[in-house]
Structure formats: structure tokens, C-alpha cells
Image (cartoon, rainbow, N blue to C red; front, side, top):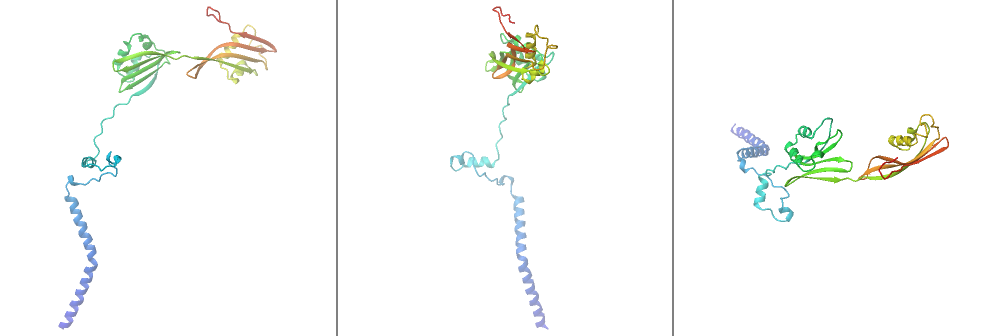
Length: 273
């Protein structure tokens, strides 16, 4: 009886040891996780490690070892960036009916004190205040403070006002125009204006051409299919950009086989025809 009890106890002991052997790795892992969890909870905030970047400012570029001060600055986080200076903005305003510069400044939330200072500049008051609908005014400002104002006061002159250290200064900039001569030929199929359009001649030049020969040709009743004309006229350019057509300098019109020619003549008095 005693031997049987000892044998059963020995079997139970072996089974228990085998069970514990299989459970040991899991118990160790659970214990390690519990220890790490407690360590994370109990670590003070000031001791949290912030890894430094792979490339240190300046030191890495020079090929030297970063100083403790550089590392501390990196671990402390990015410094507060200084507020970026306001960037000047340029706007172009088209003058409307009954518009004034004062109204434009108030509408655009610009400093009217700057406008008063600009008006006090010698010799430009009329150039600033005399506005026509369709005029364009270019304004450069920073948070409403005027840095520059410019507008075309004529086809060949632009007013430019610039703020400097001593205040505003104004000057007139010359924009000379260039006159080019264009010669074009067209044949009439139905009307003078349709033929001019096909030859890339503006309606203004076609109308001037009709006025040149108005005493000789009735452009309503006398025009025939196959009539043709050649016209030499001015084209006005500025800075390489086409602006408008000028005067007709010479023209030839063949109407029903009859040739009419005209040349522009300018007298010493300035009169032309």
C-alpha cells in the first residue's frame, strides 16, 4: 500500500515538473513585460530620451563632432522661429466711373496718410488726382503701407512714386513709342471691310482709306467684285508691343479698272491731308 502511494506521488511530481518546464518561458515573458510597464510609468518626464538627428546642424557639415550644447539644443526641440517679415504685395486697380484715388485707397484698406504725403510732392498733384475711367494704377504695399505707386499719365510717360528712407520721391519715366510702316494688299469679293479683314487690316485703317477716296469712289454703289487696293500705314509699338494703328501714308485703289492714288502730305504748319 505504501509502495503504491509513493509510486503515485512520484508520477504526480514528474507531471508537475513537466508542466512547469513548459510554462516557464511564458511566465518569464509576462514578468519582463510587467517590469517594463512599471518602469515606463515611473520614469520622470524630464528623463525621457529624445534621439538626436542623424545630421547635426553645422557640426556635421564641418565634419566635426557635435558639442554637448548642440545636442542639448536638438533634444530640447526646435527653437521658436522669429516672425517672418511681411511680404510686399502688388495690385493693379482699374479706375471706375467717378472713382478717386482717395476712394481707391479706402476701398483697398491702404494708408490714406501715405496718399496725403504723395500729394504733397512737388509737381505731381494733377498727375495723381486726374483720373479717367479705364486708367490703371499699380500699387505695391505691405500691410497697407505704400511702398510704390505708378500710373501711366500719357502714352509716352509714366509717373512712379517710391518710398525711401527719407520719404516718398517721384519721377516721370519716358516710354517712347516706335512707328513702323505696314503695307497690305486686298481684293474685294463683297465689301471693303470684309476684304480689309481678310488682309488683317483694321476697320480704322479701312475707314481712313474710304475717306481718302470718298470724293472719287462711292463705296456703296461703285464697288465691284475684283476691285483691289493697296495701303501703306503706320503701326505704333511700345517696348516691342503693338499699341494701335496710325495714319494712312499712301494708298492705291483700282475700281472697275480705273486706278486712283493718294499720298499723305504734311505742311510746315502741321496740317496734314
